[in-house]
Length: 125
Image (cartoon, rainbow, N blue to C red; front, top):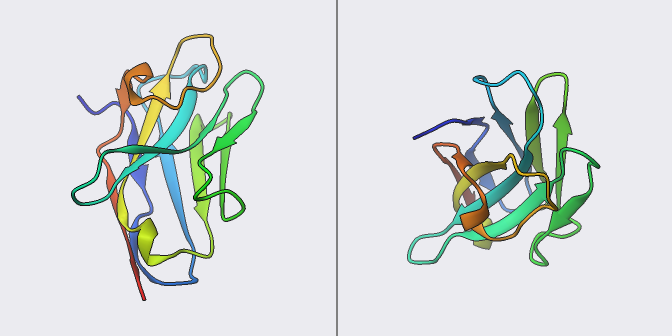
């Protein structure tokens, strides 16, 4: 069941940028850790980045550190993933996820009960 709404995917050349958004329209309280995962064809879904709702601390996969930035606008209950210097290997379906438990941001998808529908990001060389 889709509970988060994503937008912002698309087609971009290597070196370009995209910004993904993740909103939670069914909830007025901004109290869930928000994370981004991605799944490339034939590969398992992997953690990309996350941000804590209480402390705003951010976490990144090594493969995107320095290129991607996760942030959130608490007033809009929306999280963002700014992706710069994109590479062809970043091509994947990107999913937003939410964890309403009071705990540090998890890198395991099993920790997340809220999910978006996924948005395709394609980076051409």
